[in-house]
Image 1 (spheres, protein in one colour):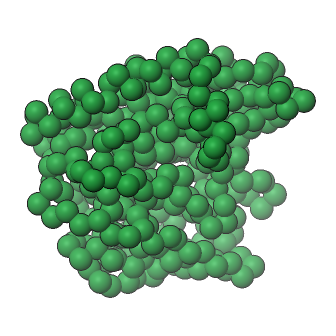
Image 2 (spheres, rainbow, N blue to C red):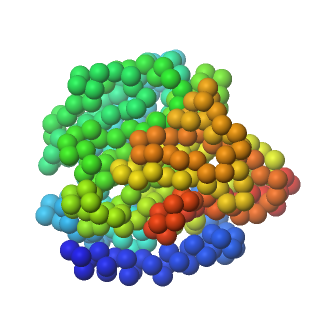
Length: 340
Ligand SMILES: [Cu+2]
């Protein structure tokens, strides 16, 4: 098991070091980024921020004895006024967690992180979870749902469906995750995402970043006592370097940031900028101003507003240097106000 871990890191490290160098020098991969939409902008369909990888191997470990890879089923959202109906699916799907490193994930809708759920304050939500995983029960705990956990965040047996109803009463940037035991394992295997509740007058954030840890081999012992092999933004090492966020000088740029953990706090920082405002838990009633680095514990989120005065490339990181070294870095490309 240990040898598999070392093998994965040996394969990864040269590429990661190059990506870090590119992020900090601010040159090199703009052309690569141009071919694919880099903005992790949520849509009303809650489009996933990272598609499942097409891989032919596995990360080994807990999932190795039962390798199934189910076809991703996209989340569906239907809105009638403030009544919102959501269909989500739990399944097991192979994804990439770093270039050339496949991972047998337990997922919402076949992607890691799961799709962004975008709501308005006051929405009446009916979320039906369909458990397509033939091997185990799953569930969903939405931090935006103020309901009794023992009546709502409960296991959905394999092949069955269950509906949770709640009112999105508090604006914020929230985590959702599988609540089935062992919860540590269900989260570490990939079962998390962002649910964003905007006040009636606010626009949705322009980008969504979910931080999480990947443990390889994905054994329970590693998740409980080990160090993560990777710490990733939106599910894969390096993908927010090759597909950067984009904005322009002088324009407010809003990012919803969620730390899924499952274990480590994030130290979110943008190189070359302060965080002009930080809404704790994404709630505008709890705003901080000109913060250099903000602590985001597992299970929490923030809404950050940035504004840049000079065009260029601005890396965003977890300023916990162990996490940075393990992949927690992306970048924002800021164009001049005339588009250059
Ligand atoms: Cu689960």
